[in-house]
Image (tube, rainbow, N blue to C red; front, side, top):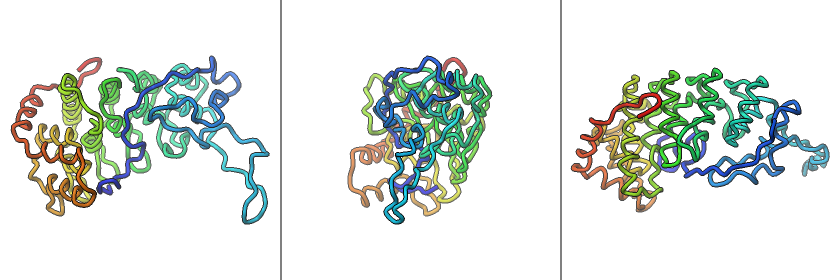
Length: 338
């Protein structure tokens, strides 16, 4: 797990506020033998906005024969790499477009809900359920795509080659007022997702939740802060109730989830990981405390608003104790509720 500021490589998109814009859907995406791609604009981008994954050549219709360009070295036309095609790849595209009727139709047409070779580009190796966990609840309090895939046998504990499961991607999606992070995590846990599973880099879903659960770049209105914080704590306690060690150290650097939140200058994650009991005085394998990681980042990259707020969160013991009391009262998630 390469744990350095700005170089912590998430296997999906960087954290952004996502908003869904409705797109026109074909009435039957499989009527012509799985040619769901015919509903996608030629440039693969026209109907995807505000943080949705840009669908480029890997999800574009197969090029025409005259689309090949001559090679500068040989002077011969070199056909471009073949895009990912077939009903399974169509399923991925339907999920990325949040097309619930299209997803249903493709599953009924035989698409494999557990395929691992049906996505391309930055999504390579991810299953449809992982994509639904990351993108399926944008603009909605419920993740209908994820529920649909689980109902048709999607494996909640399938993992990428790097060891990440759908629960990691749900944690990465984070909490927004207009998204179903609570619903997504609840459904995955109810389906048997294991929050104690560690990826090859030693991280578990709680690391991603600490760093990404609440985006520090987005201002929180005072009226919504407490609700979002309580939701954050409910998910963390749900992970713990199902066997995850919230204070565990990853193998390479000996960092806790609090270290990771501090390294990313996430004041919300830093405050709330202390509230669930991680000691801010704990050092990693280099004996660096979370506060020292923030100070190093400021020294190397300069002062920032979020880093300054993170230092305040680490030093404000009264606020930490306030949220410790609230954390004690917050119950883990239950299905169909909080």
